[in-house]
Image (cartoon, rainbow, N blue to C red; front, side, top):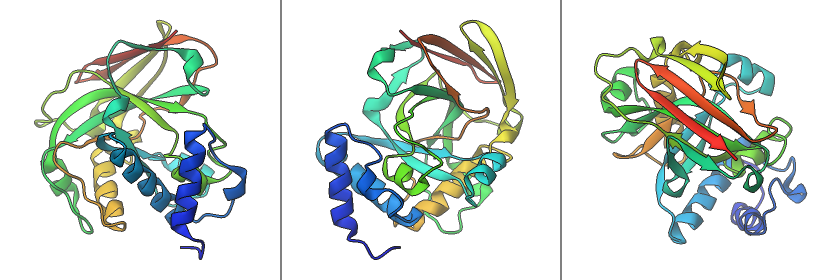
Length: 256
């Protein structure tokens, strides 16, 4: 950690958020990654105190190529709010969002507490209650790569998450799950779960062990969006996205 007053930094960034100010210049390049996460968690506490419900977590930078590009050695996390969850087919107003984008992910519901450090792949797999196709809705509220700690403080671009029908994990190998992504009915990409740290369950392993550094757990009922099978797609105009996950289901969203 740096020697800054973390509570004062959290309050300053929180107050900026209330005014619609993201990535404030006065905090640019002043935070460590640890600071960024602790500010993010402080913002989460303030949101919960205001009446929001903490729904779970997102994992980002799950592709090795992205981590190399960002010059970081591990993924990153952000929090999910229940108010940000939308059912498949939801329509967002494009004009209400800050240069939105979508990522193609699986949403994994936790069925039993996972407390790191030392959580294993087998423990994480056994803790997954169900799996749903998901689209993470992100906002480009600042330059993600230019100041990664400040991006973590601003909740890692998270805005909302759209989920399709859930089903039991069963014997499915998530590394072999696939997605076909359609933008305005045109197929634009296909990918598999192996792109997510070799297996999306590895996102749960990493997250449970990372959260332990801040004395947080993965709790029953929480949902984790795994990290994207594909690159992030930024949308420069209203659009419709439909992603078909095999052997699970489809999820779609529109921006109008």
